[in-house]
Length: 82
Image (tube, rainbow, N blue to C red; front, top):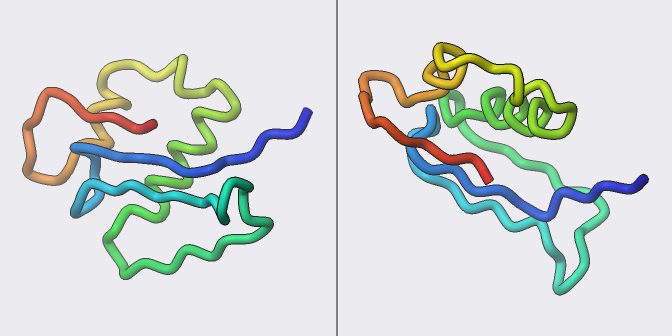
């Protein structure tokens, strides 16, 4: 099985800003993408969310774990990772 990540979107998560990352090169996924972002912009959070979505771990998360991805000092009731 071949799985290609073509991008992701975040809203209301730990990231300082909502993101929409597109990894397509034309109509095809690029072979390699390097993503460089400043400290505190959710690189590790994004990696953890992608990993959990791919291996099914996120299906086992309780509410406390999900809430831990909320932005610091924010109390929004919704967030998305697509």
